Image (cartoon, rainbow, N blue to C red; front, side, top):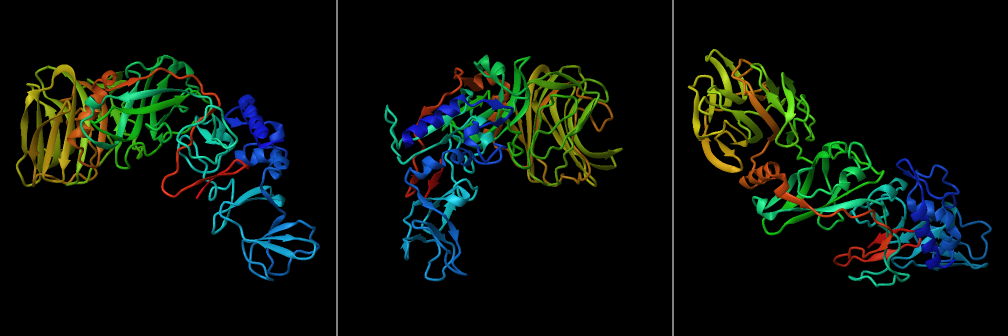
Length: 543
């Protein structure tokens, strides 16, 4: 069987292979010594069945690796080839020795030489300094359209990615008719669509921005909610502009029945120069858990989809609530805090004097009463006190106070009211222990000079919607609480506001692309002095 015929047979088998659960069951002919079928790399599984063909495709057949330290092989057969694993008895480590019937001839391997070691059914390539075995995590650099490297496992067959099969070319264009040395991709079946973030909604250059993708984005394909395979949406994946690099993501919720979703995707960089395009893929039996580091290590995000404030950041520090009711919020669901003792306990303790940011959405109607947004610390009849608080006064304007034992309370009032029964995004940014910057609806409002008024709050979490549980409740709605143990920039605050305030104008979606079928594509061209070598044992080796 020629290499071309073998290649076409493999393609055909991949196209017709059946799925059993999440695990790819290779055709029986591919797994004579691999009954489990999901315990070995794809390359090894296929190679097990095509060893005779592989031996005829140009690989040097090596009988075994051999340590000549005790002695040379006993009773070798003419043509037997050995790879030396040590230097002794005239042999040199890593070189190849062939028995002619009377003597051993030595071969110094060229860089890129690939051999087939028959006793262990393994292909190995000489890098110039060592032999590396294909199919091992330390040795095989498998190129794929999602940019991953590592062993190709059988479960990967249902990942929405495609792996290079054979390649010896780096051309920037692909011939109309594939040739023997062209690059072959065998894509998995998945649906996909592009998401374009409007550059005019971005506040500036931002790295690691966590984008909130929801069903409210413009033109989300109807097929998205019918073609996602996993009930919880865990087969949904996102890729960067190159459509190769997978992005970190956290699925807050996904409901095919209601066509609702909220998914947070970490985008490496966005700016005002051009629209940012990313890609969404879904519809396979391949699933993956949420990335614990979608948000930065110190960030905490409470989308408030249930009455228990659940942290979707890496800390997983869920809070608690008292008499909170789930209602429609600004982003998906939110919570109503209407009772005199309604409150949320965010479960986070910021260290005194640290840099931090807190952002949240509120919706409050005018009642002529004080409405507390957040408090932290303690208050004992005005004598024993260490706290800060932000609340809407009876006139609807934002008030703030920082208090510390031995000093008078220090605070002020902002110029605008926020009790017009509309959603408002409020952000408080503490710059060390000297000042707090206040932003409303994406815009900077003013700076509060609090130098010397920061108290000690250890052991006291931030409370939302009440004044230490004593009353003066928010009597309104709250949604999408974010904590950051750093100072948010004005660009980030404006972008978060635009993203969550008007999800349909922040990003738009392209048409749904049907499941991919095997096709020919170009492998990303290596940079610098790197070169790509092919392996007929289905490996791709980088030098």
